[in-house]
Length: 109
Length: 115
Image 1 (cartoon, rainbow over the protein chains, first blue to last red):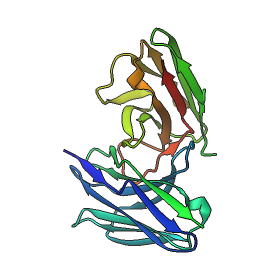
Image 2: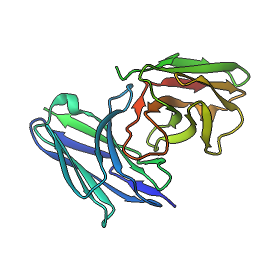
Image 3: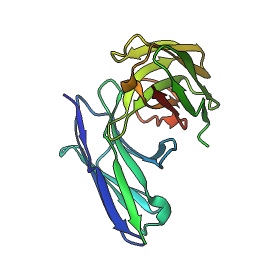
């Protein structure tokens, strides 16, 4: 079967760095997405990786290793507004998105 | 504001009621999606429409009935629901279906409670 694993919850301190991991087993691979979802709001797109390596976008970076079935989202200089759930999703061989259950990130002052 | 709107934002209904959820996208996209989001579970894809044709129906009970009258509007008709259907129902759209790299844009969702 297809499976996406990510930690259920993480806690970090304002101003610090946090890394949210995602491992996947899917039938085929056509890219990996990260989304941010604040409580009661719509998920919003953060990043897309289809080739191995690191993609940097301001305070957020996303890394992909296709051979290991592994990705991480790195958040730097954490702010209170970064408290949210972070969803990992893989596009499979049929371009259907397979979603993880999300990682709830709690930022403490 | 993602360019995808959903109404109503909250809905409480009895098991014998009939109601409809509405989604509208203002992005000129060709694909639209219905997802179910339950607490601490992955998003579940329910239906996909591409150019107003249904292309995916992931074993969803017949008490959920989608309708896509045009590429900008998507409905989810609900009837004789069960309490376990209580969840957040999210609508999304993307430029195309069946191609890589196209991010999906989500609406704010309808929080559904079935009594």
